[in-house]
Image (cartoon, rainbow over all chains, first blue to last red; front, top):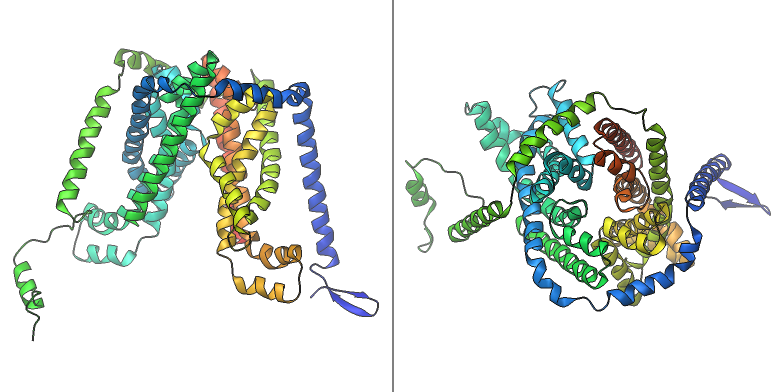
Length: 271
Length: 278
């Protein structure tokens, strides 16, 4: 126990001298990096605009309120599109994620050395690139529209779903698999009766969880032209129609809250 | 003697004998199951029918898709190297500053949002801050902040900090709420002041979780910083957007590869660190 002597008494200390020196140096390095980074940001910032920000914010607020409520009649179709992008994207992603997950899980993969790394690479590559970037790419390839949004959401979700699913597969109870194998079942029968029933609740939970995230993401996909309510947001922003912007933001907020509520309810019912 | 209202094990067995085994359905109530299936099928048909796909455009695009996939085989790091490195550096700087500031702000908010530490009024305010931060997406916050603060990494930094607060405070507050009361009471019984109580009774218990969450959030912040450039909030996104607009797929592939490599490296690092502290 590190102690220090003071006025003939031993006092408890949290760290020994060497440990506190080490901590001090770590803090010094961290703060130096932070200061250097902040300097870079500060150097490229027009501070005049920042000091002006409260006035600008007040100005935008006064333009944006009250929201243009009658504009909601034009938002029906975009909301429907947004919902479709999220739902169809999730379904396609699940269909593609299930085989990837089985190939990536240690206990079901046909080859640990060859196929598992490829499956893991698919998972990482699709997961680390945001849906907006996938949408940008797909718009360049297949043209703007809802379809590009669906595919972007689907690709982005593969990695997420497959990662959670293969972790669930790796945690299954092996004794059930063995029992099915002992009855003389084939490889596919073992999968269908030994593994799938064990991961089905996890799969349903992942699907609903990802659907909730996808609703959020699909609301902004339109900013790059991939359909949904984001298209209306971007065109309203371009013409500086702030009352429409505030209404769209309220609608998006409502969609996010509702989808989160639905997903929490469904997951509560499953688990 | 068997209970007359429920079938005895013998009769239950005899009704089952001779019938083939069937998989139990996922949803037990048949009516609900069919209603869900039919409703979902109807929705799917409606959804697919309303999506307009211009197949000839898709077919034309396949050639460009092929070019893009091939570009991954020969990514071009050199032609726009100054733009790429400048953008990457800005993304990393935004990530670092936003993570530090975001984590520093979210710790007091997490303390306020833990019901076993904070009084009710503070709790309600902190939970409201978390709810607002969590329900607004990064990109929308970035649009508003760019409109207010002007283009550049400052808006991106503020966006990421704001998003960090909602994520980190919520999860940290849940961890504080589920901490062991005995240790913190022991520290309090020794006559500790409030700050000492937090520092010696609460902090050691939640520190591993805080470090794990912080590293995870740095990872997310970097990924998000890659898209903030699309709306003018600094970072690599602007370069990426330009590359796509000009059909320079080899440059775009190079940027995407760098992002993937950095994310993979950070994921690996965060796994190692989280395994060490937990």
